[in-house]
Image 1 (cartoon, one colour):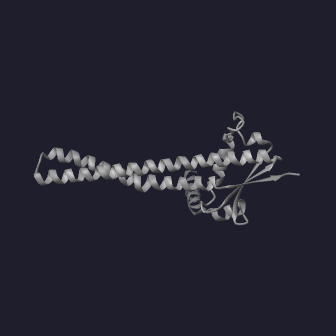
Image 2 (spheres, rainbow, N blue to C red; image 1 turned 90 degrees about the vertical axis):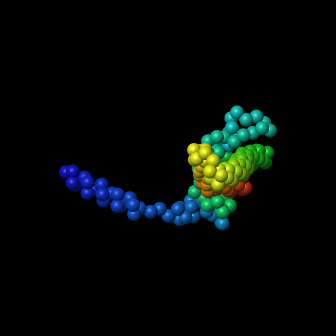
Image 3 (cartoon, helix red, strand yellow; image 1 turned 30 degrees about the vertical axis):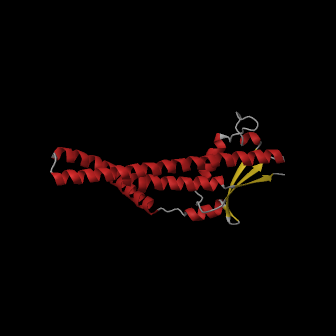
Length: 198
């Protein structure tokens, strides 16, 4: 009995390792239409789009809708144009303008946040680079002058810390921030269309 279960588990593991999913085919099938990626959202009224707590001229997007749009755009390659299509309810011209402005403002602010994060990342890189350079000069000076060995070892620990933080900030953190900025830019540039059900 145990051997059978063990063989079954191994067989399952081999099958899982070979399993594949064609993401491009999925995106083409469910999102792409006429050279653009569509995110279609079914709504029954403007209340499905604009937050219940928003007031006139200070509208804010419904949190559930914002999450949905971000989740759906996750699978769309960032180089594709996104069209957000609202379907179901009928909206007058004023409501359409409010919806478009609110959605674009929300994702524009997300883009602004990523730009601020990138600027802070740049400042952090400059600080780490400058501090690391200064520590390197101090360590070199201390080693040439044969000053207290324990002091040079302590400074070396700090130097390695700055080097590691610099690499982490430049290679990993900045790459993620640039990717997040692209995704926010994609949604802030999305075209918004309305399709009314008859």
